[in-house]
Amino acid sequence: MTPGARETIFAPATAPGRAALAVIRISGPATRFVLETICGSVPEPRRASLKALRDPSGDLLDRALVLWFPGPASYTGEDSAEFQLHGGRAVVAGILEALSALPGCRVALPGEFARRALENGRTDLAAVEGLADLIDSETEGQRRQALRQMEGALSRQAALWRERLVHLMALLEADLDFADEGDVVGGLPPGFMVSVDSLRREFADAAEDRRGERLREGVAVVIAGPPNAGKSTLLNALARRDVAIVSPFAGTTRDPVELRLDVRGIPVLLIDTAGIRDTDDPVEKIGIARTLSRAETADIGLWLAPAGAPASEPPPGPEWIRVRTKTDLHPAGEELSVSALTGAGLEELLDVLGSAARDRAGAGDGLIVRARQRIALQEAAAALDRAARIADHPEPAIELVAEELRLAARGLDAMIGAVRVDDVLDRLFSDFCIGK
Ligand SMILES: Nc1nc2c(ncn2[C@@H]2O[C@H](COP(=O)(O)OP(=O)(O)O)[C@@H](O)[C@H]2O)c(=O)[nH]1
Ligand SMILES: [Mg+2]
View 1 (cartoon, rainbow, N blue to C red):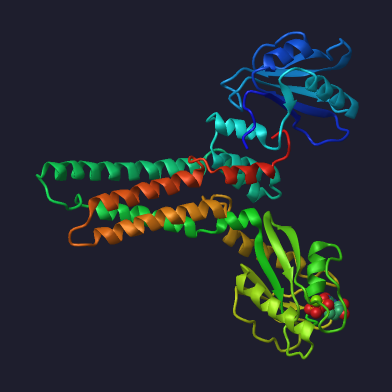
View 2: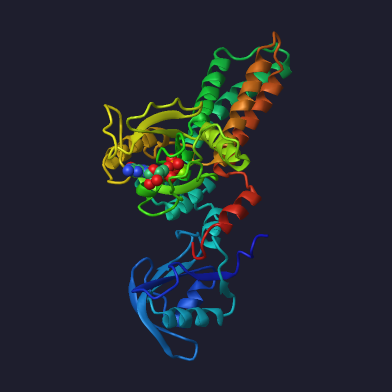
């Protein structure tokens, strides 16, 4: 359900609680009236003005900075305003109450400001997703990636691709017109399929590049090895707290234990697993099966073995980084080695892990950052693939090729949300905090 766009909405844009400042945003046709009523007058556009804010009975609520952004050159595209209040709970509550009492004004739904910006053509879905990611970003790489998305990296690339598709469609249209007049029979323009194929390859390459998604969601790093290798102890040492149970009894860890960690600026999902060995214990067997399947889907594996003992071979799965453990008990050789007990070698391990994770997550310059975008781009690539197969016929049906190009263009539009996909919007905005 789309909320009525003509209502004026307001919400705190800062987190609740006592703070130096609190920001309240207002957007909608009654904004001018709100300013006149609460601040006594409408300040100069886009300039911070110090105003006395009063409730409808004239009681002073706060003396605060007020910003007035007349539409359409505002974030939402509507008349809007911002109050930069003193952050006391009673101040914020007083202003919110005064706003609720004004006709045509109501509290905003989560993400409603961004939604209005989208509906008024002030932004596109990929950029709004970038904004959501920026607010959720926890590492430097995530921040860089979110900012690039917010500033339209994907939207610009989609526009360039679209232009090339439209040019190819125009060539086909010209051909079809000729065919109608009966002058020229069939046949695609020279070089046509070469252009289609190079576009298809660009789509497929961009869709295959998972770095952006890994940077958003975390690079999955599985910690595996035989029982008692020190896997859980290493996880706890890296986390600097007790996340996983450590004991001298083999087979302690059964369920994979997951932990998010910032490793040298890259978000990593560390997964502690059950030690791999032959066992008759049915529960431990399940744990080992889970380890093996988690290893298969992980991006990186740490394969642990105690120093001084012969190391076993890791199961199939990701690229393994071999790590010797318990170097306080036995000196290790040339290999990467740690003592989770003393902390020796942990910094080196984090360096190695960080650079491996960076290789897989990129530095924030990936184009595709969400599964939704990748699927849309894959659909566009598939349409061009079908176009190539149709064109392979001795007498290709040009209308069918044209139709596939149109579908490819639709895939690009879906990728950046130019075609309205309401359930995508509902899902995205429900994750937003109020006031965004
Ligand atoms: N001396 C020493 N003992 C360790 C070290 N890491 C783990 N251990 C011990 O080895 C045993 C097994 O550790 P744990 O982390 O549970 O191994 P996991 O089965 O691989 O998860 C426990 O008794 C730990 O205290 C280490 O770096 N030095
Ligand atoms: Mg363990």
